[in-house]
Length: 404
Image (cartoon, rainbow, N blue to C red; front, top):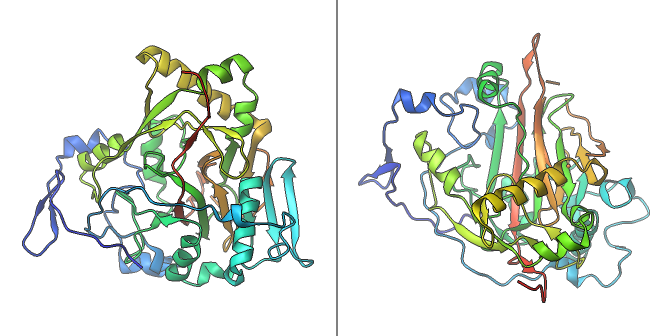
């Protein structure tokens, strides 16, 4: 069910009598200074031809002009904590095959249909994701069940997240839609300003209670490339020296959506929510595993509050580089259509990779963010169509008794 929303004038538009927003014009000179390849901005052209060329036209991104208030504190009970039998008998039956990528990170589960899980099996799924961090399910009929069924499934694992700027499914603002139509020139313009298409991030970490469990569903993708890479932030924390662990345990970081909102407004995109600033611990304790996890990303963190500006930048750069270069605590997901991946946003960092051809699914060692490597001189860039659903969870738990 969609949330209650109000129409409200904002700095990027003028409130009209019929409840819509008239967007302020953006000058050509402003647009030319912005990076063009941005999933948060509306397409110039979404036509009937686009519908015909897309396997799932219902999931083409839309930008409904609604307004969402900021997320308020809510009670969250992690379903994984309800599990009594750690062998997960309701989820992992005799017909189920589980393939691990490495001892501590990433699994592929065959023989399970997510759409048929009982509540007890969903609780065990939450525990499995907490333990393995990334779990991939090939050949899921949930992909064809429609947005209502997909949103209902994820509502079991936490409160829905509503997107402030990015394209969604009409009537279902909890969806974050990534749809690339193979525009090679657009990607090339992006790379004229950027040296890589990857960005290591955690989803909407600026919210007061950020996501715990997150679903990615592939609708269409290249045959090779466009992988998603994950890194385990609990393992990254363990690799630090005890002295550095003790130093960062009590520190806090300011997470903010201000840059994302400002960029979208400057480019003439639609904004549905005011910027959010939230202070979270730099090291958080996972509520299910009890592990300490680095809570840092390259997208939403403005500073470490207890440090001076230069100190904060140096520490954040070091911690991010430590995670990015730690290939021995990373996993890479290769996709095929109808694959669903559920991961733990509390104990992973990720990036995606853009690439041209049909996605296969295997996990190999590497971290989560999508990679744009599916472009070549002969065929251009292949289409990539994927959705994300977040389940908001607990307020990040700080390390107890950490000395400031």
